[in-house]
Amino acid sequence: MPPPLDLLPSLLTGLLVTLQITIGAAVVALASSFLAGLGRLSGRRTVRGIWRLYVDVFRGTSALVQLFWAYFALPLLGIRLDAVTVGILVLGLNLGSYGSEIVRSAIRSVARAQYDAARALNLNRRQTLWRIILPQAALRMIPPFGNLFIELLKGTALVSLISLADLTFQGQTLRTATLRSGEIFALILVLYFLLAQVIARGMRILEARLAAGRDSGGSA
Amino acid sequence: MIFDWGFALEILPALLQAGLVTLQCTLVGMCLALALGLAWALLRRSSRRFLAWPATWIVEFVRSTPLLVQVYFLFYVLPEFGISWSPFVTGALGLGLHYSAYTAEVYRAGIDNVPSGQWEAARALNLGWMETWRSVILPQAVPPMVPALGNYLVGMFKETPILAAITVQELLQTAKLIGAESFRYLEPLTLVGVLFLLVSLSSAQLIGWLESRTAKTAS
Image 1: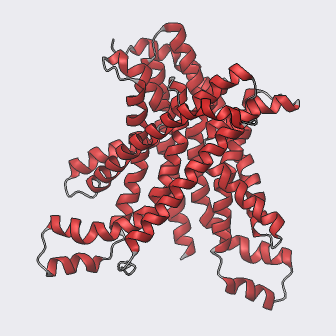
Image 2: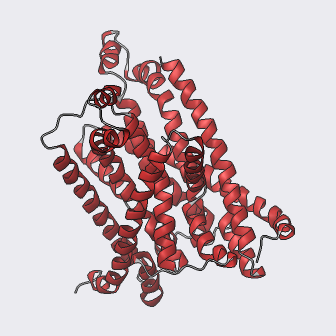
Image 3: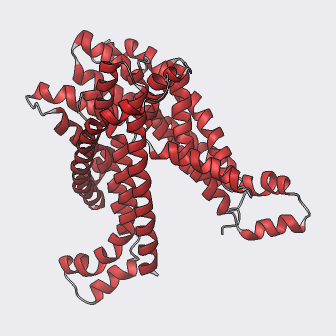
């Protein structure tokens, strides 16, 4: 293959790790976004307080500091996790703390009348949430979650600093071996860019699918 | 091993010193981001496609690629062109460049949010280009931008630890060095986390206050 494409095969193993971390962390981020987003709307003060604390701590400190803490400091407290687990959990929880705001504001943006209508139909709290509120809120969450997943993809580059052999890490290894810094990092940037485009495109398709056959969902 | 308060107190001065470097990086980066972002926003508004189109794609590209790789790119590739800046300068440049893609969006949204009637009114009053911007558009466009720019300032502050990767002596790098020397990572890393938490929570408060203030003056 002509340069710089001859570098591609060595970068592909790293790309797979990047994908693995991105997908794993996206699952954790989605779960924690919904848990924290719903938890912060809970009627109980203690429940709200606990999720608030989670959001503040993960949003207030830096993702890289959290990764380092979980990888280097946590073992000293007796909890030893391997780098992949640390990467997926920390990035997932970090992005989830931002995602909880998406869930919270999407739920709060559903019109008051929808709650009233659900009550008039004698639906209980659970049914109201799952059948009436979330389906409408979900549609509004998709564009901001698309942005969040792109931030997550970008964030996965940090795991290279806790010695996980992702795309960025492979780039560094290749750089010390070949000294072709410009080509390597340009190629890596393009790969990340393409991945981000795939995520953006995918989210747009998902949004169009979910929006099909529905009106705007009663704006507030 | 449990948390050693004595050791934590001992390393605190060194960490606070490093905190100053973190703040300097953030401020220099933000100034760059504000200036560069304005340039992107203005280019994108241009009616000449050969100016608007590249600016759009540069912003999109910078926004969807990792800051760490961009910083590596600057750090390892610039010297090949005979430009060798210190890690601090390279790092601040990287931060500024990355966040300029975000500030560009803030400027754009702020300007687009000024109703078109305001432009028409300015034209009806026969105001010049300069006068339109200075007395009609900017006074309405800028206040709503402030909280958004503030959020990116905090965001940038939280991303400065990435510069540890190119050996800028900021908070995380200093904590790593202390950890490597003393074989105690718990105290330095925890302290760094707490310092970040303190600064970002208090700035979040400040931004919330600014937001409520601009919301009040706007209505």
